[in-house]
Image (cartoon, rainbow, N blue to C red):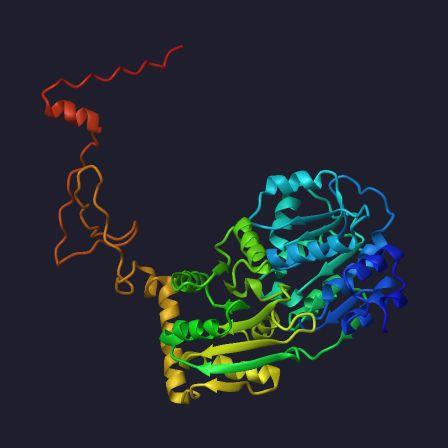
Length: 478
């Protein structure tokens, strides 16, 4: 297949492709579009950046053309994606292809106003692009019906499994009609994918254009061995070598990525950050500024590892190596887009040696060393053990569930009474039904005192008589 015109697409879509400068389909598009045009279910396996969005988007828009207005609160096509950024990117790609047509596209994601999304769905839509969690929220509210869905797309299905969306997918499946066309696209094929395929797909055509774990050919990969505490300084040196070029820096945690972003900003770099603690509007503004070149460095967690399509990204830096080796493939796939060349540098601390070896095993190729020396196995194992202990301490705050700095198993001390400033006496007895603690002889029980309201206590202390209680009426008669 050497030309889009050979795929049987309608003239409006062919004209849109010509305006976008697209003439030749990518391998995944050439192999996936024909069976999808025939109405078959499909499972597509291809590495990131190979054009999967058009592979399902073109047949979808072709089928929806000329169907008229959708029913209220309904959707004709549903696309599920794991992240907000990927949802927005899919919607933008389809909107550009559908310019001039009557095809309506609505996005629903977490972090945005659910009331506004409900309002957009009142008139129905042709294409609904959603994250699973927010879609379930709207289904529970009765804001949308999936009973008229003709086509379903699961994009980056492996990441949806990684993020724990399997239960959400099962719940969504109950709202979908049995008669529909389903397309599943993924870069990797984890074991849980078979359950998803059996649930959603009906005798699918399987299309695989690259083995799982294979990286793009035009990415120059390298690793620099460096101590964890020296990573920020080394990263700054790399960034200064390529002024004016867009660089994407991946961290492992939200807190660490934000801290690194602020540090680079204090050093004079034009930098922004996106991670799960940012609101949807903040993430959209940051990505727009990065695309426009207004900021040159974007620090992100793996929320940006999938589907983010910014062709001018020249460098990807793995400030922290991912503990899931497949995420490395997705991270570095943010560069070398649309036939360009790119460079990916991993900064490897002693505790990350096992992660590096797992990545090399997945990609089946050694990564070139451009700095430092590989850490000895004994040092790497010791550092990894310490890192895990520190991570567990950070998540729990302390072993055993107490307050930070409190020994494991010790209960927190009681807080002072805000009115008296005194701490309550420690409890010496056990719960009801248990024998009280003793020192060889039972202690006499203290006489129970009636509780007095603070206002009465103040009045009594001042010598004022206490107001007598009103006698209760006798209800025994009448």
